[in-house]
Image 1 (tube, protein in one colour):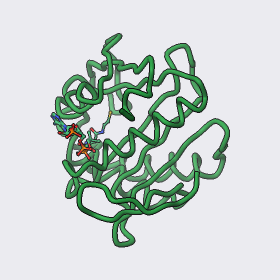
Image 2 (cartoon, rainbow, N blue to C red):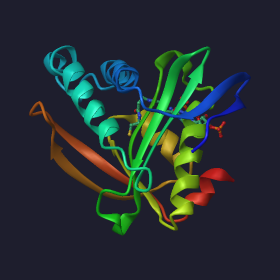
Image 3 (spheres, protein in one colour):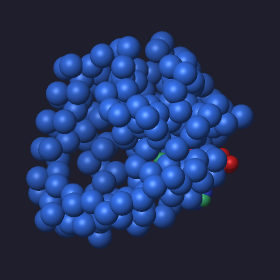
Length: 182
Ligand SMILES: CC(C)(COP(=O)(O)OP(=O)(O)OC[C@H]1O[C@@H](n2cnc3c(N)ncnc32)[C@H](O)[C@@H]1OP(=O)(O)O)[C@@H](O)C(=O)NCCC(=O)NCCS
């Protein structure tokens, strides 16, 4: 994916492939600390999370495979304000997996999430695959966002998270990811 400038909402932003794992990990951690209170324990969010994210993104970026992974960011005035990561390194029965989607809390509601989902959908279409993701049922804002983007809830299950917390997780699918682009 090539870098390009775009107007999203009323701001000029850069859409670009990412490789700076520290920046991604920082935004990922900021977003979890803000939105995942009550899903993960405070002890984990304020403790081991930051280092877990640094490790995850250092490894992902180091072994990044362009054919099977997409890692796209939105940058405004040099600052990373959103990113998504999509992978084919999973069971593809339900499609390409949007494993992460985060927009900086100060920039919600400006079209950044839709823009990132559009890039994910475009990539899934290019791979001739449906698209899927998992979202915590308690994360109502994200659930509503995915429904707005015409995702279909196809499954739900209870999972035990890394800190031992229990969560109901929903699976959303876009059988034709092209609907996100329309
Ligand atoms: C979910 C998230 C990515 C949405 O990003 P965003 O940039 O705020 O969303 P957008 O401004 O692009 O909104 C796109 C559309 O969804 C709608 N939408 C966004 N949030 C919504 C909500 N809470 N309820 C209903 N609709 C919503 C918008 O109205 C907009 O509709 P439109 O384009 O038809 O006018 C963002 O809120 C976020 O980062 N949340 C925290 C992290 C997270 O939960 N990630 C998902 C993990 S599974």
